[in-house]
Length: 597
Ligand code: MIG
Image (cartoon, rainbow, N blue to C red):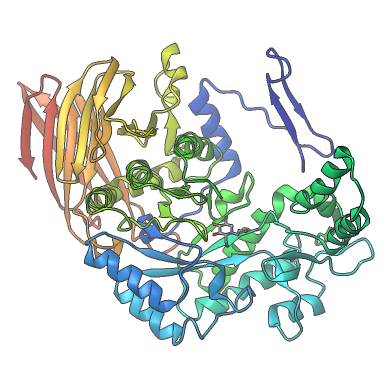
């Protein structure tokens, strides 16, 4: 339900949390520091959802790629331009009249065969599913839902109806376990055609208008016709239309029934609606194929939903300020348990410039969910949609992302096992006063500090180093310039072709050779870049990447200095695929050692 949080806004010295409804559970966590508090919290809310490994590849979306031919063309552009990609998204226009679990066969003929063909190219197709179910006789999902009373009810006990994309819709009562069971199995209709992942949208639920309130607004307009309206009447009239969508009074106008038959007003449980849709999908996947991991993420969510799927941050814009917002939101989402999260890279609304896409990619390559998505009517923003030069940068950045996959996947698995965030603020690890002020640098896993450039026309930026670190100017995954920098403030160079990145002291970064898609990354060799002061360690995690409850495979890498010479010890699970390690060890005095093991 609703909660008002006032963090020193009305009164600087007061944090106030107002909860208008009753039945509130309050947990108080005491621990030594912020990271420990978050770990306790993450232990309490449970283990994160685990996506398949291919879901860590680059993903391309657009509202909408209009048919299979267009998608074939997009894939061809990726492959032709040597830009890796693992997924292409289907937005709402693949359906018939926006009806969930239907497929427009005119736009996607021979769908099943096509999906097999795409998979051979290393591409998975990911369809959208919306919460609202079109009111239409003969539409199976609607008919079954209606006959079984699976939809939310109005005050009179009839199916509540309001308009979203398909026109008038009903809304599945996801708070009821029987409804979730039914809904979860609906996904089978597409899974049977070869689909391995979904995104759940509009599940706040978003409502464009309810017929009653639209009619009232129209009546008001008709009444005003021909009159000399006073300004206040004008504003009221205007607002009656502007406030039609997602209106509180509509959310108060429908009801849920839980498994014991208890009625709940939607407004009181609004926060958990989207979560329960995603839970329905997740539990459905378990029933459909217990062994297999599916890609799944949701727009609406709340605490606890990270057990069922990931989250994306919704409709941002192609604005520089939203790139900064993205940098700040991901650690917050991680603290809430959402490890598989990301924003629409390049921005959803408004038009992106090539420069913005370059810089946004430089950051998003570190997000577990890495998807470029944009809205209907905006400039296309695929990595190849800009100048040749900008495309080359995008290619280099995305390839670097693939080189990072062993690391990102390892850190993801480790965070999941140990209930800790993957992306976090500096102050979670470094405890001086100064770090608390740093809002535009974040830690990514055990080894890295990210210092993204998030403003236009920059050739670099200022950074604060909480300790001595190894500065990496990444142009390509195998073209990185290294420089040791000491604790304190620095201005670092990072032109548009360069990702500014830091490896922490006594830490190791594993990199693999990038391929066109994650499934192709079968190599047994890892490059290890190490910034060695005294003793550097790295714990690498891996697994089969596709099954639930897969065996965790580990490697422990330890590098020490003996008489000025680095000594390397690697202990690893027999089944771990990485067998060869090419090390580049950089000492604080700048001395470099190369070793192959
Ligand atoms: O009213 O499906 O956030 O990613 O492209 C907009 C169309 C509905 C909102 C999602 C966005 C998606 C769009 N959807």
